[in-house]
Image (cartoon, rainbow, N blue to C red):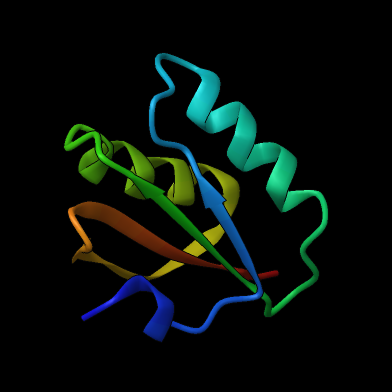
Length: 81
């Protein structure tokens, strides 16, 4: 599967960022989404496989997809009410 084949409203690459930077970028991206829209984040850091689901629980985001494609980990989140 290719990342290009996964539909989303907003795409953000958080590869190459450390510590709080990925979550700062995610928070910035969430500011432009409306209810029901989806955000795809990609990274090469395996540790985010547990960090992103925790972030989603804290921010009331629904994690609707997670996996590995094109040598990257992807996270598909939906803004919910």
